[in-house]
Image (tube, rainbow, N blue to C red; front, top):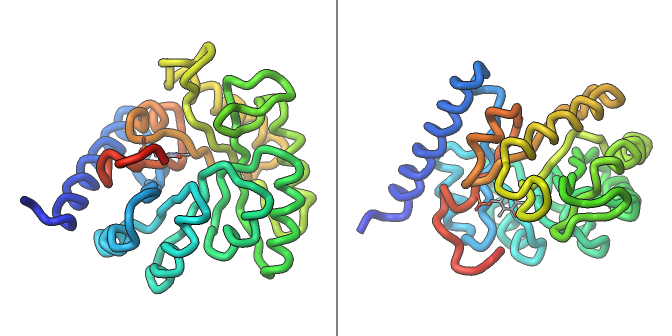
Length: 239
Ligand SMILES: *Cc1c(COP(=O)(O)O)cnc(C)c1O
């Protein structure tokens, strides 16, 4: 029975190899892609081991779990990313630890984030979550704004005190025309990113790719991949 540290080190090495290979195949430098390890459902002790193993970015999707974990890990040199659907009443707590919010998908959230950021005296990087399978004017089932709503949200983020539009995030759709076609989905996200950067040049982060499809995301041009189970193991429950 290998210990947890060894297991995590081996998994990290495998993920690192996948990212490096995908970068090389795409003619991209390895430094163009940042690994974010999604630690949801796993304990603070794992976060600590990951930090010891050199991980610098971690992500969580539920404030109830993330807030105490981040507090326990406050001494570690980590950047915290919030990647889950975000309710306005959780915003203040999330900004207590999150450096980057990946899931901005509606105006009310921009308003709430701005109020909380100003109160905390912070500048917060915000990614707009795109639901590639949502119809115009709608939101995705797992959150996200339809592609044609991206620019309006980016303008609102740029105008909001305490917030910066930093780029886009997506999860490859399970339904609709992109189901089972992660590469096509990520290519579409890159097109939307090009349009966004024309209006907001600094909004150049592209957060895409998870354990199953990070290779496609790197090939398409993602700057950040969010990897959970390939590093930590299959989660005991849906999270
Ligand atoms: C859980 C989660 C991930 C990581 O998924 P894995 O398949 O475990 O790599 C990435 N992004 C978001 C938004 C998630 O909720």
